[in-house]
Length: 265
Length: 295
Image (cartoon, rainbow over all chains, first blue to last red; front, side, top):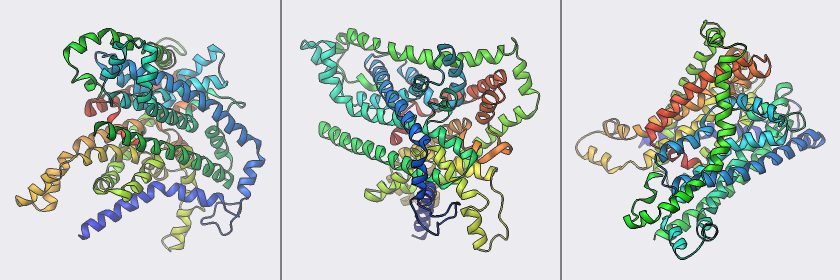
């Protein structure tokens, strides 16, 4: 009995360690002091004001959105095509090809970054939004591939076959049969690809410039110079935004889980 | 997971679906071309450049193998990744064990504690650790306040901070494969062992632990592989004393502009990571199954 309580306590402490950074950053952003004392002795919103006064933060946020949204769209398109092609195409050695599809996500980003830099330079795209969109899509496609593969594997391919034997052309089959079955997987994958792009630093360091730098890159540059609570304010807002995205994803997953249970039961 | 997609389809149907399958295969073309152009091609260029910049030959690799600071950084990277993996396993195992027995809202709270950090920006998390570890930071103030220390310790930059930060980022990647594995373990086997006279500790060591090995090996391979390429945490918390491969590569390419050396270091990192990825695939049988909880 005591052993069990001890184990539960230990697990609780380790889980606390996991959320500790946010327990530090969020209160710090409301600090009334200009140095990073914790817990803050007085409270204020002035660091949010400082952030709002500096146009760089808004600019970087807009850049991150201008890069993240197209990245999500490209990742959804290519990731979905790849998942359908591999799962429904009865590809020989599908396991190997799937592994290759997921590889960009697992590889250290620095390798891709120094590889893409000269390619973008030659294409004349370096320091444009397009360069970062392409780079982020390479790591976003695997995420969509994973979520859509799971969705496609979750129902019988005979459904599409039935539609086609009844006279539907491939286009109609996709929109009337396949798409309703996989759209939640596509949406979840898209949100995760967006979140990954929104958070990515290494490719942005190599591929964006002063006019296209993303939010993580700006935080990174500011961290090198000063450790002010302004960054805590930015971090808190980014954190809240991530939480909202995660909440949407888990709601979608719960709904999908229910829909699947209904189908089989 | 993918191979099983069409099992259970009658043989006649499989024959008819052949042309449809071919249609589906064409869908692979666009993503394959995109990844060939912007993933495979750039990486091939990195490998080629490691042999051709500034001149053809293996001089970049000779510089690494000469035993100077570059080799040291590569070895330190492998050592750090190994330590981080061991620490993650040590911390993740009890958490996953407790979580595998939870249900309802307690499980949801615990899962949120694992998933939320996973999706929180690594730059922001490293900033938080800087706040904790700095000279007048939370840790120093607390230790001095408690009378443990007379004077502040200099944690930054340093190995201790790097390990705390890296373990924090990798821990969810160890917990999730373990949890997936442990939830599938048939607990009646444990009861059987106890009925047969094993005490709980023996039952755990002889029955439960061996059954959890697939989760352990998947988690270890995944965490070690991902730790090798760490950049943000060692760059912010480690400084020049605790260089890791990715930080060194970024410096060589972005600051020193020695692209030949950067490419050869990247090639070494690629080979080691690639070998770990193959091992991970062998252990788990698929690329995605063990991370499903995270996605």
